[in-house]
Length: 283
Image 1: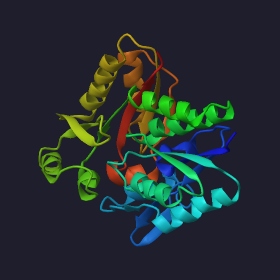
Image 2: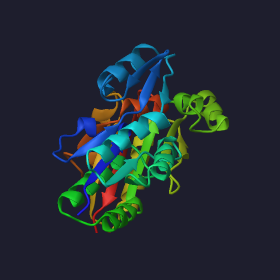
Image 3: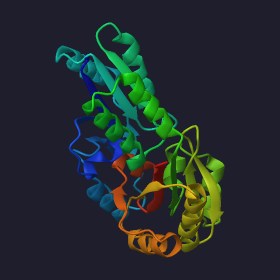
């Protein structure tokens, strides 16, 4: 049987989740005023959001791995004897990392089979794709069946969050300038969701943080109605987390959910005061 290795991007937040799976991480970098820092190793979520909170004008950028870096990584796997690599990535609508891995797959097809998989999502929801693939590999499941399962997962997950400001999303090109204009001058608390194509879109424009977080719960309740599910809290800074935990308990009756900080790469785009709810359907 071919040896297989799962890679994931640092946006999957697995740096902040204890697991025993054999998963390698491709590190996207953070550009902090010209200093490039590897997400999750050279800069952790806690330190990153502290910097964002301390400097309201700081708008860090992201830098995806170069083709050269990716080629070196995959050629190294081939030299180690790996024949196949499954790579789960952040949505291709939010980063060019997936496309870069696809280029490597074509250039190295005679040396190693690389299977890039666009999760079309982000944060810990994205990380679950890698966890699932790694567990299936350990169980000896064939690659085609692993990819089929990942495709099923892509059709049965939910992620919605509220942000305090659209400024970072607009400046980093993840939302239109018009949406940013509304957020800045009408002082709305935007409700954002991951769409089927993997893009981030404004779902509702709400006036207060409390109502925005209640709306997240309402959308979540509608999505999961009649289904079993596994839910997760996604957040950047800690400011809203305790309040949201109580809101989830009151509106949904859910407690003791996994709480996963967004990686700094994600924080570059959503800012230091974003929080949301994600899940996978389990039936």
